[in-house]
Length: 399
Image 1: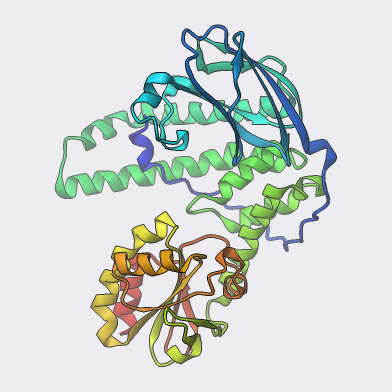
Image 2: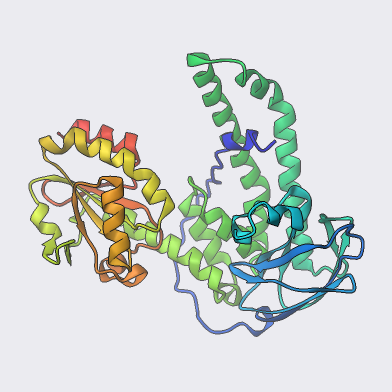
């Protein structure tokens, strides 16, 4: 099942309405923020020697077990997906110095649920993944139902296409490429319909639900997210939902997309930053060349993974007038310089070393990296977020 999921390219629902975006409020939401208390019964676990961990969004708690029970009390800024995880002693002993963040939890050893303020009892039934909340709220019930719908959809897709997947393992060359593309197209269309009929429909009909907000935030991360649908559904939320931190994340995604889309065909906003030698470098100094502005950082895994392809394209077109201006969101100069050297990035690099708080990052509404803009010889933005292949195609046309 997991191997098949690599072919799932989730696409979005095409919603025709196009509403203007409104600024979310920032006031606290008392009913959706506060303490959650979990009373976890693990008496049925055969072996409790190890580490228990509960993660609420990005915050982690390592509770202790006493007499087969665990109590967790944690303050939530908003409802979040949560994980109850157990790392048995034998998993830890493989590398005692490794953080649990770098240890893969076995299938039986984690349970996901939807956390929000209140008192809840969780009973573990022999394995962590067989846990259940004895007194679930409606938000938790909705979360479980949506997770069940996703599993049902994926199982059905697998059953309908298992023969194609089996065949894919035995073919090579053009046949393999053709079959891979067929499966990708099938999964794209299947997921589009699933989101249309199930997920986005639920979000639209539950404008006051933090569960719906959680689902929309997840949707906003999808590679082919439909931003019109995202904006419409965001605006459909009640004010109390819009006031939550994750609603701000969705708003920023819509805001960034609106800015970036409106920038196409216009002159790229000029800026000046210091290069690796401390010399001021202005974007306008690149006029006369086709230039790629590349926002990245040494600590950004996807950025570093993209660099070899970018180096390849740069080497091919630099003699024809292609330039790259790397704008780093680093905050430690040594890390920035070392990454440039290690990845062999032979183009101009600038940074104010202010992490996400740099003026240029704010100017270009950068809330995620990598991101890039291709600019023509007159400084006009031609395209954004180009991968290696798309960039090469653009440069073949331009140079």
